[in-house]
Length: 158
Image: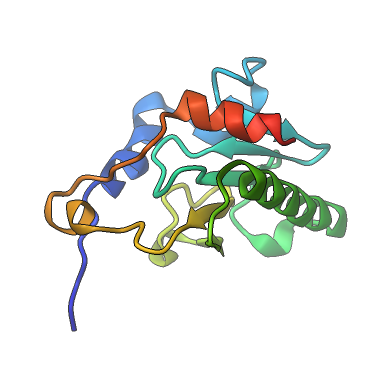
């Protein structure tokens, strides 16, 4: 079995502890949507760019309510979470024309959740050949656009 190591993920996992508290709750309560890369807000959830993206346009849809358990969400919250995810997928498709998507939720530390007390859904656009030798050998991800440009491109299609 081959292993691909992803040490850059430590930045994502460690950053919330540096700021103290829950980063998602802090972002949700902030009024600086553009500065925090919040793309959209709903009644029970919001969409935000991942500041440590796997790929261009990688974002998360996050309930406002603090819970790490999917079973804690009510039907209205679950519906809005999925509706927001679909809306973001449509906007990313229009902005970047990806060839596919990874969509996922990591529930619990053992499942890979970096912030296990606040569940969130990842939406990761994918293109054929988007992972290359830089990622696997040089511990470097190459992104063709910065977060400000990605944010503007997605917002244009919302």
